[in-house]
Each structure stands twice: as structure tokens, then as C-alpha cells.
Amino acid sequence: MKKIFFTLLLLISSLYAELTNEYLSQKLLDSKIPIIDIRTPGEWRETGIIKDSIPIMFFNERGGYNMDAFLSALNDKVDTTKHFAMICRTGSRTQVLSKYLSSELAYKVVNIKGGIMYPQMKNPPFVKYR
Image (cartoon, rainbow, N blue to C red):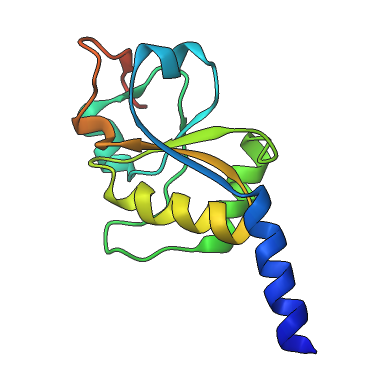
């Protein structure tokens, strides 16, 4: 009985999960959905951040993470019942994290492919991180 309930719960939650993958574009910026930058503070200082993005570090410099702290910060800054996007340096960290958030927590996540290093647009609106 527990297996059936768990399977049913998993199927139902996957119906509400939504994950899309797209490159950073003017269309994405114009949509005004929040963009969460999960890189480290050192990376934010190195390249700057997308204007109006929300920096919330996920993996630290050693590759460790604190899921509870990240989710707390994310839920404080974003309405996770609506779409939001995530960006990192190359897209590999957000690919893993966005898949988890979508499938396990039914968040509506847009994973920005290629990360900050591969914008499809000519002049992304970067600002200095302080």
C-alpha cells in the first residue's frame, strides 16, 4: 500500500513540475521573471551579475551546499509557485539543481543554458556585484 501511495504521489507531483531550458535572451529578460544567480560571490565579482538578478549561492567554493539554507533564501526572495530562472557560470550547476527543484519540489524553473558565459544576446545587462 505504501508503494502505491508513494508512486501515486510521485506521479501527481511530476504533473505540476515544469522545467524548461533556454539561453539567456532579450525575450527572457523582457518576461521579467526573476533570475536567480547561484554562483559564488567570487564569480559574481569577477563577471558581474545580470541586472536585477538575485544572487543566492548554492554550491560553495569547495563544491559543498546547504539545501535548506538555499531553499529558505529562495523562498524569501521568489514566489516559487510561479516561474523563475536560474543561471550559473556555464549552465552545469543549474542543470542539476533546476532538474531537482522541478521534479522533487514541483517548482516552475527555467534553466539558463550555457550560463553567464554563453549569452545569446550581444550586450547582456551586467552590473557590478558589491
